[in-house]
Length: 115
Image (tube, rainbow, N blue to C red; front, side, top):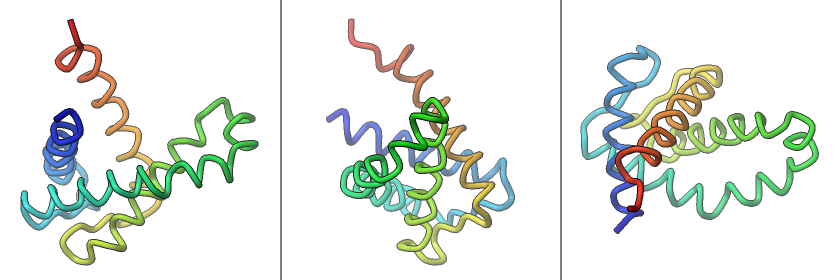
Protein backbone atom coordinates (compact mmCIF):
# COMPACT_ATOMS: atom_id res chain seq x y z
CA UNK A 1 0.00 0.00 0.00
CA UNK A 2 2.86 2.40 0.80
CA UNK A 3 4.36 1.86 -2.66
CA UNK A 4 1.09 2.82 -4.36
CA UNK A 5 0.85 5.98 -2.24
CA UNK A 6 4.43 6.86 -3.24
CA UNK A 7 3.57 6.39 -6.92
CA UNK A 8 0.54 8.67 -6.58
CA UNK A 9 2.53 11.30 -4.66
CA UNK A 10 5.22 11.33 -7.35
CA UNK A 11 2.54 11.62 -10.05
CA UNK A 12 1.03 14.67 -8.33
CA UNK A 13 4.55 16.04 -7.91
CA UNK A 14 5.23 15.59 -11.63
CA UNK A 15 2.08 17.56 -12.46
CA UNK A 16 2.97 20.31 -9.97
CA UNK A 17 6.56 20.59 -11.20
CA UNK A 18 5.43 20.67 -14.83
CA UNK A 19 3.44 23.79 -14.02
CA UNK A 20 6.47 25.36 -12.38
CA UNK A 21 9.23 24.37 -14.83
CA UNK A 22 8.56 25.05 -18.52
CA UNK A 23 11.12 22.38 -19.53
CA UNK A 24 9.07 19.58 -17.95
CA UNK A 25 6.08 18.46 -19.99
CA UNK A 26 3.47 15.97 -18.80
CA UNK A 27 0.50 15.28 -21.10
CA UNK A 28 -2.06 14.21 -18.50
CA UNK A 29 -2.46 12.86 -15.00
CA UNK A 30 -2.56 9.33 -16.44
CA UNK A 31 0.80 10.01 -18.10
CA UNK A 32 2.13 11.24 -14.76
CA UNK A 33 0.94 8.06 -13.03
CA UNK A 34 2.54 5.87 -15.71
CA UNK A 35 5.77 7.90 -15.54
CA UNK A 36 5.79 7.56 -11.76
CA UNK A 37 5.26 3.80 -12.09
CA UNK A 38 8.09 3.54 -14.64
CA UNK A 39 10.34 5.60 -12.36
CA UNK A 40 9.61 3.32 -9.43
CA UNK A 41 10.45 0.24 -11.53
CA UNK A 42 13.70 1.87 -12.67
CA UNK A 43 14.51 2.77 -9.07
CA UNK A 44 13.95 -0.86 -8.14
CA UNK A 45 15.95 -2.44 -10.99
CA UNK A 46 18.51 0.05 -12.35
CA UNK A 47 19.27 2.44 -9.49
CA UNK A 48 21.03 -0.12 -7.24
CA UNK A 49 23.31 -1.08 -10.14
CA UNK A 50 24.13 2.59 -10.82
CA UNK A 51 24.84 3.18 -7.14
CA UNK A 52 27.23 0.25 -6.98
CA UNK A 53 28.90 1.35 -10.22
CA UNK A 54 29.46 4.91 -8.98
CA UNK A 55 30.14 4.12 -5.32
CA UNK A 56 33.62 5.70 -5.20
CA UNK A 57 32.44 9.06 -6.56
CA UNK A 58 29.35 8.90 -4.33
CA UNK A 59 31.59 8.48 -1.28
CA UNK A 60 33.93 11.29 -2.38
CA UNK A 61 30.99 13.67 -2.89
CA UNK A 62 29.45 12.60 0.44
CA UNK A 63 26.33 11.27 -1.28
CA UNK A 64 25.56 14.29 -3.45
CA UNK A 65 26.19 12.20 -6.58
CA UNK A 66 22.96 10.36 -5.75
CA UNK A 67 21.10 13.38 -7.15
CA UNK A 68 22.88 12.77 -10.46
CA UNK A 69 21.82 9.12 -10.35
CA UNK A 70 18.23 10.20 -9.65
CA UNK A 71 18.45 12.61 -12.60
CA UNK A 72 19.69 9.78 -14.82
CA UNK A 73 16.72 7.61 -13.81
CA UNK A 74 14.40 10.54 -14.55
CA UNK A 75 15.94 10.87 -18.02
CA UNK A 76 15.55 7.12 -18.52
CA UNK A 77 11.88 7.52 -17.63
CA UNK A 78 11.72 10.33 -20.19
CA UNK A 79 13.19 8.02 -22.81
CA UNK A 80 10.76 5.23 -22.04
CA UNK A 81 7.67 7.46 -21.92
CA UNK A 82 8.26 9.27 -25.20
CA UNK A 83 6.29 12.45 -25.81
CA UNK A 84 3.89 11.94 -22.88
CA UNK A 85 6.62 12.83 -20.37
CA UNK A 86 9.47 15.12 -21.45
CA UNK A 87 12.40 16.61 -19.56
CA UNK A 88 14.27 19.20 -21.59
CA UNK A 89 17.81 18.94 -20.18
CA UNK A 90 20.05 17.15 -17.72
CA UNK A 91 20.30 20.23 -15.51
CA UNK A 92 16.54 20.40 -15.24
CA UNK A 93 16.48 16.69 -14.39
CA UNK A 94 18.90 17.34 -11.51
CA UNK A 95 16.73 20.21 -10.23
CA UNK A 96 13.62 18.02 -10.46
CA UNK A 97 15.44 15.20 -8.63
CA UNK A 98 16.39 17.58 -5.82
CA UNK A 99 12.84 18.96 -5.60
CA UNK A 100 11.37 15.45 -5.52
CA UNK A 101 13.80 14.40 -2.80
CA UNK A 102 12.96 17.43 -0.64
CA UNK A 103 9.20 16.97 -1.03
CA UNK A 104 9.40 13.22 -0.34
CA UNK A 105 11.52 13.81 2.78
CA UNK A 106 9.09 16.43 4.09
CA UNK A 107 6.12 14.15 3.43
CA UNK A 108 7.85 11.18 5.08
CA UNK A 109 8.63 13.23 8.17
CA UNK A 110 5.20 14.83 8.53
CA UNK A 111 2.25 13.22 6.76
CA UNK A 112 3.37 9.62 6.22
CA UNK A 113 5.07 9.20 9.60
CA UNK A 114 4.06 6.04 11.47
CA UNK A 115 2.82 6.68 14.99
